[in-house]
Length: 261
Image 1 (cartoon, rainbow, N blue to C red):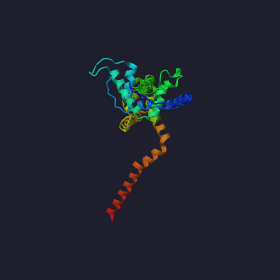
Image 2: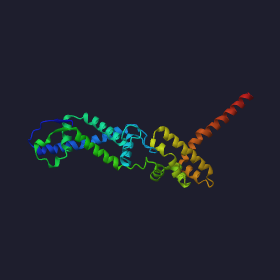
Image 3: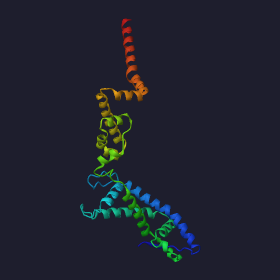
Image 4: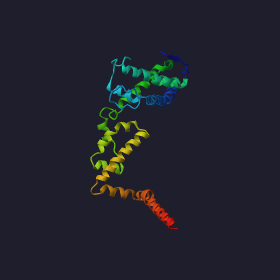
């Protein structure tokens, strides 16, 4: 066990412990968030079948909630154990960059017998193992609380019930009874995010909206579109259709007049 000792004065022991607690609590929270962020920055391994994991944090949470995965399916030992070893390595990297006094405060804060300690000699020193265990416990608590239905095999049914498409196109799909089906078709692209996926989904939504406009026998969709975007439609028609038509007519006239001269 990696155990370093730092001598601490026994004067004002209680106040020192209270100060150590106050300083260590936010530092422990930072370690937890830094660990989760590090896992979010790591690419998913894609080893859990129809799970839309975006990063290693998604996969860590999945194996924690759905596991343990102790079978040596790919020849590298227990999957769950390998995930825990990866997590421990990430925590160790975060702990190693902390200054000595912070490590001491964290050791005091995370010591199992701290509540019963009344002996200044029991402060001991820096104990990285206990710090790591405390971070691991809190990371696992966060991982256990996550709702993973959004990335699980049933995400195509879950996501459309939790989100909605606003705007005229979204309402048109909803009125046509196609809202859930459309979202279900594009759940993986929505989860992946990014400009390319946003563009693909937007164009697909536009195409379906235009089809619904053409199918709209009572013109209710066109009326709603014109009512909301009349100014923009007028400007677009002016720029893209009317002005070019007028310019072309004038050009024809000028050409005709030129021929007559």
